[in-house]
Length: 292
Image (cartoon, rainbow, N blue to C red):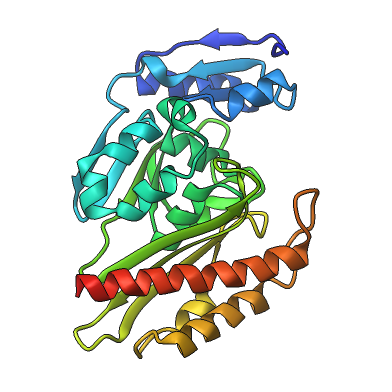
């Protein structure tokens, strides 16, 4: 299939790209990696009158460690982020999540920031951003603003971006010392969007008690969720099997309205999410204990 006709612009500066978005408003779409947008165009699920291609804008393809976080630019390809030394050393959860996205050919073109802006609720990276408390940098006619990941994802394929704004950077906090991490998902085939998935981190003190716990859920709602009740069940004591079981039940209790669709029932998603939380927390605990 071929997409509907559109006007194409290839700005060479970020200011030019923002100006084009301000001029065309909701009629425009931004192209970075195109791994989500191009199929939607070909299937006529998206019909923008204008396409603004960022690939000619210099200086947006970076991955760098700075100020306690890993910063990823809007044109950094998923494969490059997956392989970056800064990610391996400071934020391995991000790299592991990327390895679950599609296949290498997809990751060679797809961008981390593009996946966040697309905001598919079954995608891995939005859940990673929410669980870690990532910061997202948005550029518009009035300059730049920083949005917490919790506030950025609004609903299904909907984010806190005005028509004349674009997402230019994602900042993922580096993992603290004595922190373990894990990601677990169920998908129909490897590389597919998840039916249900979990990302988790656990930080332990010198006595082995949990000082911080972060759990992000994807594929189980209209946006990525932070399982705060489950996190509270883990804090202040060693995360033994009983506490992990309590966190599992807290997640299931929070997902009474999990969606039903052609891929899975809400009841199935709720059950699987609990299983995956138990697995992810056990793996994160093992890594945290080894780091300690």
